[in-house]
Length: 445
View 1 (cartoon, rainbow, N blue to C red):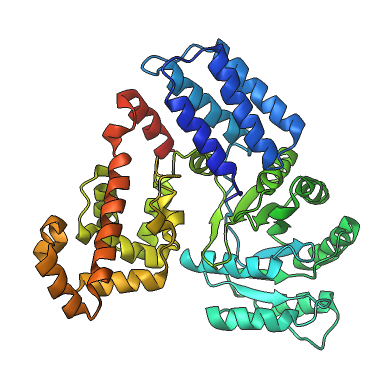
View 2: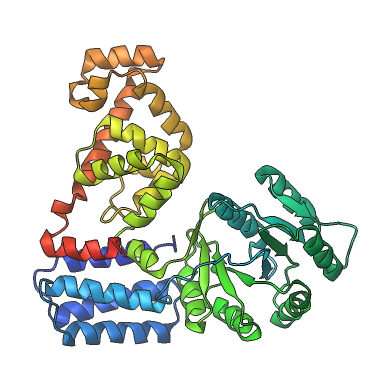
C-alpha cells in the first residue's frame, strides 16, 4: 500500500529501534528520514515540515513517561503525530434510518461504480441487503456494468438505459425501493469540473434527500484530492470520502493527507482490485501498519468474519508464540483463502512487515490448494511434529498426494521459512517489557 512509503517508514522505525542512545543527532536523522519518505509519497511539503517540527520538538523536549524508554517514547510520538496527520479518529458509516439513502458522487474514472460494488459487499458482510439505483445517463453501458455487478452479488437494481432523465430515474428508484433498508444511488461522473459535479449533487440531493453523500476520489491524483474534498465538504453538511486505488500508488500519501487536512471525513479506502480489498478507514490502524507495527486487531476481526472464532484465536496465538506446526499452517491457509493475499494479511502482524518470506509474498490460491492436498496425505503426528518428516516419509506423502517429492520439499521449505519469520515476531523478541506494553496499547485501541 502507498508504494514505498510503508517500507521506508518501517525501515526508519527499525533504525530507531536499534539505537542504543537517543540524542539530538539521532532525532534529527530520524525526522529527515520521515520527511524524505512522506515527500516521496507526494505529501504536501509544508505539511511535512509542520509534522516533522512537531515530532522533533516533542522528542527533544518531552520527558518519557515512567516505564517507557527514550527510544520507545520517540516511536510513540511519531505514531501519534502521524495519526493526527490523517484525522485522528475513525469515522463510522452509521445506518440509522430506513431507508438509509446513500448518494454516490465522483469524477469520471475515480472508480465510483467499482467502489459501489465493494461497499455493497462490505454491507452484505454486516448483514445488510442494499439496493442500487442507476441514475448515470451519460456513460455508455453504465447500467450494464452495474447489472453485471448486482447479478453476481444478488443485489436488486433499478435503472433504464433508454431514460436519459437522471432526476426521473432517482424518483422512480426511490419509490421502487422505499421499503429497503439501504438504497445506493449511482450518479454520472464528470471530467474535472467540480462545479458540474456540485450542480448535479444539488439537483439530486433535493429529490433523494440522502442520509449520506459519498464522494469517491482517485488516490493516484495525490494532493489534488484535497481540492475535490474541499469543494464537496463546503457544498454539503452530509458527506464522507472514499479514496480508491491506494494499492501501490506513490501519490496515495498525498491524497490521504490532503483530504484529511480539509476536515472531510475519510470513511473507507480501496486497497486493491479485489472486491474485498476495501476497508473502513481508521487512522490509528493505518499508521500502525505503515510503521511496521502491524494491526493485530484488524487481522483477528477479519479472520473472525470468515472462520470459526476458536480456530482464529488458536492460530493467531500459535503464529505469535512461535510454536507453529503444519496443523497451524493448514488453519492459516483456510484463513488466507477467505481473507485475501497472504502478504497483505501477514503485513497486519506487528514486526512482520518487511520480513515476509519470499515464498509467502508469492503465494497464490492455487499454491495454497496444492499445499493443502499434500498435507492431506500426512499423518496427525507429522502435522503436529514436522521434524520427523524425513526421506521415507516424503516418498510416502508424495505418492499419496500424487505429487513429486520436490513438491513435498517445497511445502516443508515454505513451512520452515514461515516458522522462522513467526519466531522473529514473538512478544519476547520485541524489545522487552516496556516495548510489549507500548505495542499492547496500539493493539488494544
